[in-house]
Length: 115
Length: 113
Image 1 (cartoon, rainbow over the protein chains, first blue to last red):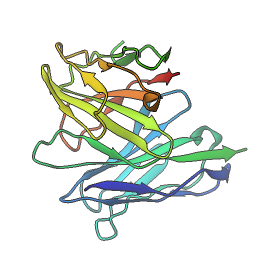
Image 2: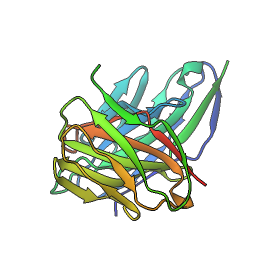
Image 3: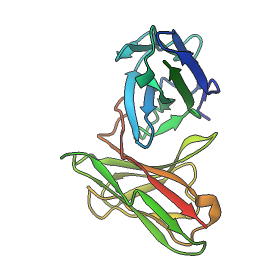
């Protein structure tokens, strides 16, 4: 079945460091891919998405490229800030016949940025 | 304000009791979803609904019941709570379609003693 695997955390970085959070997926067909962010005590918010191969999603300095050949959607940011401290989830949406938009999530990666 | 709200935010109950978690959205989204969040598992889908009176099971439906008599509401009921159902529960909604994002509530933290 479909699945998403994220790198295990926590990831601890100093402010202005470069961030990469790895995400790989297994899916039949051509899923849409998402990154969601969860700040403490809050629900998940969409960070970015990509709906087809080679698409690059970007938002708030974060970006991720849909790589079909490596089945990956790694999240990157050039210079992290303390305010980026959160849990990041990679997810895929199966393009099955029902087209419901059901999401399959990775286990989440906690990012802590120190000043 | 438009959005998706969950209630209560926190709930403590005992094993064997019935508990209902509420979810209300103001966007008139067709689709609504219930997830549970547990350490090491990310979010797992419990139930979802494509429209009023249409519901279907997700990955982990056992021990849960849902209903959707109105488009805007999607309550989740634990008919006889067990300790393994201690978790954080999130409701979400979307317009539907595999390339559309879901919009999440702030969650309900449920503890079953």
